[in-house]
Amino acid sequence: MLYKTLLTLHLFGLTIGTGTGFYIAAVARHAGRNMDASEARTLIPGVNGALSKLGTLGLALLLVSGVGLALMADPAAFNAAFQVKMALVAAIVIYVGAMQILAARSRRAGSMNAVLLMKRIGPLGPLLGVATLAAAVAAFH
Image 1 (tube, rainbow, N blue to C red):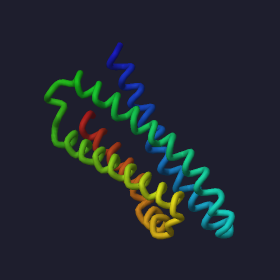
Image 2 (cartoon, rainbow, N blue to C red; image 1 turned 30 degrees about the horizontal axis):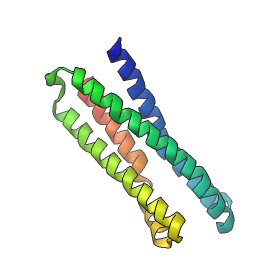
Image 3 (cartoon, helix red, strand yellow; image 1 turned 90 degrees about the vertical axis):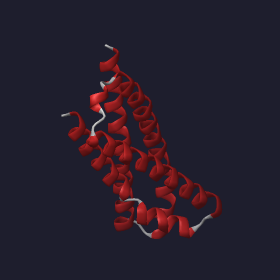
Image 4 (spheres, rainbow, N blue to C red; image 1 turned 45 degrees about the horizontal axis):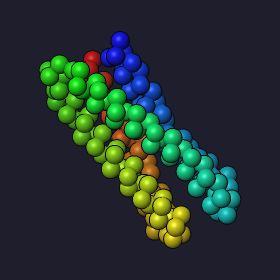
C-alpha cells in the first residue's frame, strides 16, 4: 500500500512539474505573438511566477516520493537507465534553481540580461522533463 501511495504521489508530482514547463512556454509564446511589450511585461511575471511556484511544488513532491520509492526498490532497479534518469533529475534541479535565481534578479533589479537568459534557456525545462520521463520508462519497463 505504501509503495502505491508513493508511486501515485510521484506521478502526480511528475504531472505538475513537467506540465509547468509546457504551460510557461505556452504563456510566453502567446504573449510574444499576441501582446505588445508593455502588456507582456505585466502578464508574464505574474502568471509565470504562479506557475513556477506550482512547478516547484511538483518537483519537491517528485524528489520526496522518489527517495521513498528508491528506499523500497530492489538494488537491481538501479540500472544504467536509472542512473541516466537520476542525472537528468539533477539537471532539472539545477535548471529550476537557475530559473528561480534569474527570475528574482529580473524582479528585483529589472535585469534585462536575466530576462534574456531565461528566454534562451527556458525551452530546456520541457525537454529535460520529457527526457527524464523517457529514461524512467527505460529504467522501469
